Amino acid sequence: MAYPLRTLEAELSKVVAVTTTEIETEEGDCKGLYLFRDEDGEKFMWGPTPVRYQFHPVATLAEADMIDFLCPACFGTDREHHVMVSFAGRDIPDEAGSRSHDGKPSRWAVSGTGLDDLVLTPSIALSASAPPESKVCRWHGFVGSSGIPPGHAG
Image (tube, rainbow, N blue to C red; front, side):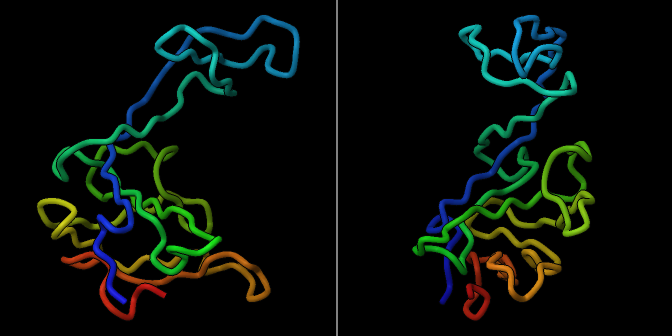
């Protein structure tokens, strides 16, 4: 079955680095960690480094660093999950974006003008190194010029 990327709720995003110098001083598990606040000044995240990455939706492929879409193999099931694919040649820090099965940054060549004609190469293989008894999704397929081509959804 073919799935247009829009059917899979695809979203183009830009990677944005957020930095802080604030350290949590209140007693508890987060004391001494870097503290991040939202737009209203409320605490919302703590981390071991002063930088974290957010993914902001963008309208065009030209400004996007990555795409996120529902897995075509698990679409419409109780195992539904997202696939995140980072683009090659974009300014994505190694700490952000998609990762290979061995934990290294993974990046795909991208062509097209938007969601309706996006092409990613090479193919995408989820959890290729997971043991056979694992219940991890093993979708392996392509993103072609009209979404996920027939035969590559399951």
